[in-house]
Length: 215
Image 1 (cartoon, helix red, strand yellow):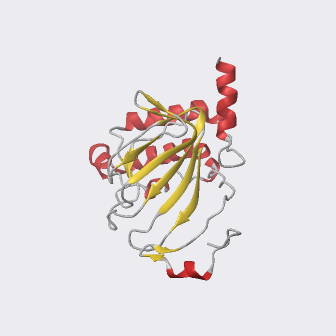
Image 2: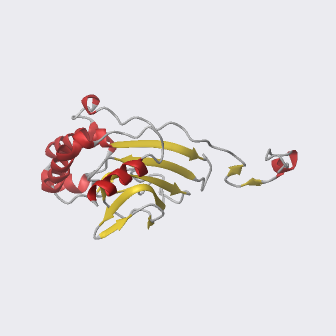
Image 3: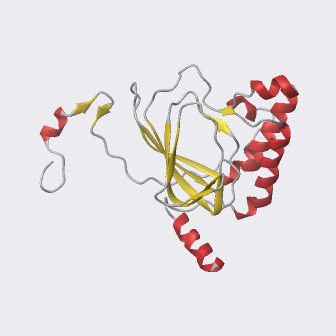
């Protein structure tokens, strides 16, 4: 690297199997998908839900998944930051969840292990509350769920391949239609609190406001 911080020609010889040197910069956060644009009859197409369908029937499950997606869509923003299209390529995605967002139980067997890092706000994972600088590791295919804290949460998702290409990207692991209804009810209860931050990391400001108001 040159003294002024610019990369010199020598750096071009350093190439990983994953790819060459690459910079990504702070992008604007993507807006949540508008709930009014959710097609309830088609939203289930993005999920693997065969276990529920065997127990409750195809159409009731598809309807309930559609209602769930419509209920929570305003409370989540996903912004890809980095991605390599090579075997074992690394990816980094920023995700914001609004205050008290009830993330449904699910898994991603197609995409491999994932390391989650809390940037701002809180994740409520069982009895644990994980704040900035904390995180958790999810082995490929393991179901998980959590709730965003009262000011919302921003997390980074790190992946480096290792998934099963033929497996579903989003597998719904809720155990009943009643549990999905609980997700819907939780989303509807808090939807008025959901306002996506302007910039990555701004949830820290909301967390500070909440902490000061709670003290």
